[in-house]
Length: 399
Image (cartoon, rainbow, N blue to C red):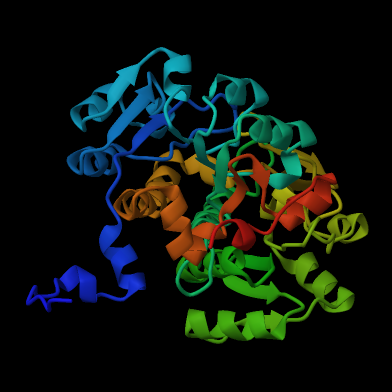
């Protein structure tokens, strides 16, 4: 057999794994952004700047008329950024990829084409079994942005929105303290010769940390309670100063609540937030004191808490003013939209650069963690157990 002198090419010499890397081709995204239909939801997934970045890279974005109005973004801003603006809702839901803040309704899922990619929050406590069955029927691939993990193993969307909720809880309390109907007419802070505002925070997570930072910045005296010594120690380190911290002991907590002007609930639970403050404890609080229960999203950590709305956010119980609105970040819709957009838009560009969602989740375990439905197959064991639905490990499907 004659020997040829044909030289090997670089591609032939590459190992198989590297050949796959070289072979990856970019894909063009076609993203639909419908208007949120929940009266409590005012945010939008992408800002005009994020849309401009996507269209600059050759992707298409279609947005429903008025989708950004509640976040102070006009249709013209999106149009100038390169988006296609339409009043046809069905046309938007017909796009291959849908971005929403709130989970899609069953009626919205009906408008989607088979094998659509849906990226939104999931809010599992508000879902019903029919939601997942509708996604499965359409063979939809669905990602929950609150489940997406960062390189350090944290949840960037949850952390960012928790920062907003923590900061907002103190600002809301400051407003309520001066309200004419029932407020004490107090300025939140520390004025020379005047006792500082006394704040009790339940929970030393991200919400509690940012509530403490904001309250301390305004000059308040802060006490933080949590049963995790690790969280309390981390909080102290992040604040760069020593504050009163304690595990949750009824006697110490009651003493702090009797003296405080503001109590902020920032506890979390696996299924439901634990009730830390009983009705009897609330009855011992000062007349005109303010409770802001950020934990109301998962049931609330005050026994007296009841869900309220942005339109009617407060009620009085035991002479204490309660603020129990779920989804506090939606109150600050533009800030929250910027935050969500900053998290989602890099992932969208990554999905395109990797050649599609299948390749992207194969190479990014953090993004894969956000997938709970893959081509109509439920891939979350937690959801499967909660709703008694069959599920598969995504690592056995995508590898």
